Length: 211
Image (cartoon, rainbow, N blue to C red):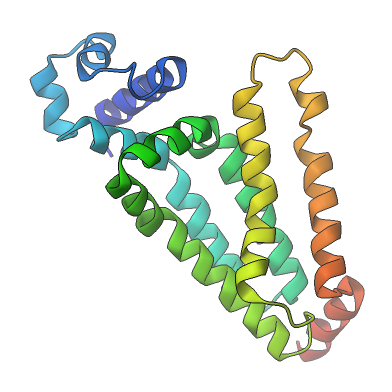
């Protein structure tokens, strides 16, 4: 990605966050970026394409790291799952997906194809990695057997809810106290360990014995 294109994404992201999707025009983005509208269309063929680039910025890197963690057989299943959880929190809280989560929910209802593109480009690969790690862990006895669809939602719902809460109440002076990422993430991980009946120490010993 060129520096200029990155600059446009940064500017447009801030405008979308401040004004919403409907309240942000291509003209406004072009003016803020100091370019002609035609030049902006050279980088992004439509407002929808620009918005998708904004919400997707940085997210594929998080998904790629989650895939690496899921496939790293040198680590216990529980450790790999925890790394994936940490990465998903980072993606939802600190990337544009998190910053723009409330706008994404509003916009994708109005533009079904945008919702489909977002799912296919950013969500499906993460789901595949998570389900593969889960099924492998169940197969070797590292995890209690659970329903994959239900577990997917349990894994994803807390960081998504936290992201929406932080976006909705970003003006609160006590945001970090009310919606503390590390505290909520720890409680989430403890709940996942209880659900899957994870014994982290036992899994570490099993991997060490195989090395």
